[in-house]
View 1: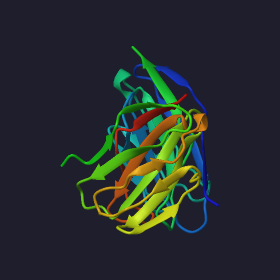
View 2 (view 1 turned 180 degrees about the horizontal axis):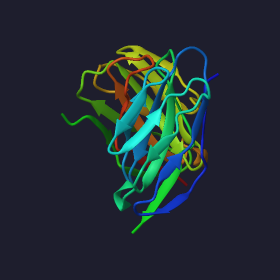
View 3 (view 1 turned 90 degrees about the horizontal axis):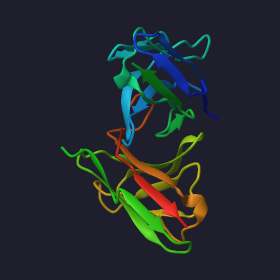
Length: 111
Length: 114
């Protein structure tokens, strides 16, 4: 079946540091890949997505590239801000209606 | 649009009690689902629906019932609450299923079972 493995946290960075959160997946067929973000006390919201190999999703300075050869979808941001502190979830959408989530990575950015 | 709404926001139950978590969306989405979020476990799918009158089980359905009588509403029923059901519950909806479609999440219901 489908599965998602993402970097365990927590991750603590200083403001303006470079961020990478690793995500790898196992799937059959041609899945779509997503990054969702959950701010404290809130539900999840879509950060970015990619629907086919070599696609790059981007939003709010975050980027991730769908790499079929390495089955990866790593999240990156060049310069994090305190407001980026949140839990980040990598997710996979398969041929049915279901999303398969990673366990989440807590990011804390200190001023 | 209000998006996806959930009530209540917080709930405390005693073991054996029953209750219904409400979920509604005003986006005319066909697909709706319920997830539970537990520390270190990510989100796990409980039940989902691909349209009014159609529901199916997800990854962790035991102890929960659902029904979908309208496009807008998708309530989740706990039949006899157990401490293992202490969790945060999220409802989500999307316009279509399939790989590329974004799911929109509600704000969650934090449930504690004593």
